[in-house]
Image (cartoon, rainbow, N blue to C red):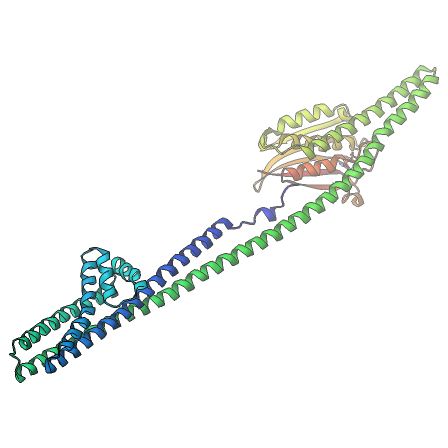
Length: 470
Ligand code: ADP
């Protein structure tokens, strides 16, 4: 059974593409989230490091001022210890900027009181993102801070030298205090800028992460929804197709049952009558009577022959694939007419042909079945009471279709039969045919995507028009 045009016209996007989209989106989402979390964690480590840097610098300033006024060596030691924190961070920065030894940088960060678990993230972010605007800006602030730390170190050295050589006066103490204050104030600004820049970058990354997560999740949800809706649609379509196929199978089975029953009956009936005729012929001596019986036997055999031809046509039409090939309608008509001339009264009929279309692209086997059956019916159902009997065949091209017309001035078809003539085994005269002819014609026409219509009037004649797609 061929697929109905409804199902043929339904097109689905390739579900494979949707699965690829989901897979790629998930992979990207995982990567983006992984790296973003790593960046945010490194940012946090830098913010943490900055607080140690700032605390170290402030404590160093405090100890230096105390040392300036108390000359307590312990304060000098504490000053040096605290100053080492920003100084070590500075070494790490300079090493990483020069693409130097990461080990030295890690050591610097460690002395800068960063947690040892944060060292990898600190180095990784610096190495890979130092060109990114927010980090570049933060590193710049950090650089300026390191310069001020160096200045604080110089001030410390000067104070220590003056204390050592007892040169410190109240005026120089005042000057040193001013210098330390100025450095501290500037450092506070740098440290604040560093934290703000990092914070700003972190916020931007967080917002970007939220947006990308939403976008990817939407893509994944939409793709999965479309995938499911396509699969559900496909299931529904297959279900419908199976239902249609089942219905067709039921019809075919029913037809087959009828066909087997009637075929066995119709095949046997000529044999039964033949047997009867042989029996009575055996008892007959009159030669004329014997001839009459022989004539009847011939008729019986012709009928059976026709029936077998119909069965063969029926089977070919059902089983053989439609093959599109160049077909000559002229040749098909000539062949059919010459093969049908044995039918009673055929030689009394006038055949006319008006073939505007001859060569067409279609299925030769189906066209042969159609033409032969329509012509044989026109001959069989000719009106022998009419003075002139004619059968006319026409072919022409009309509105994009090839048309074949077979008309006759035969006995015509009564109104009440018109709806049934294409049914299996429908016949008004069982002596003239099997009732399969027009049923096979209709199936053959449908096989080549055409249609057939009939115009007929009882006692006037009939016209069958077959439309074939070009
Ligand atoms: P059959 O083998 O009986 O001819 P068909 O299926 O070919 O069966 O035709 C079905 C019935 O249609 C015929 O019995 C006949 O009554 C009617 N019919 C078909 N073709 C013609 C025609 N050209 N003129 C009149 N009646 C026709």
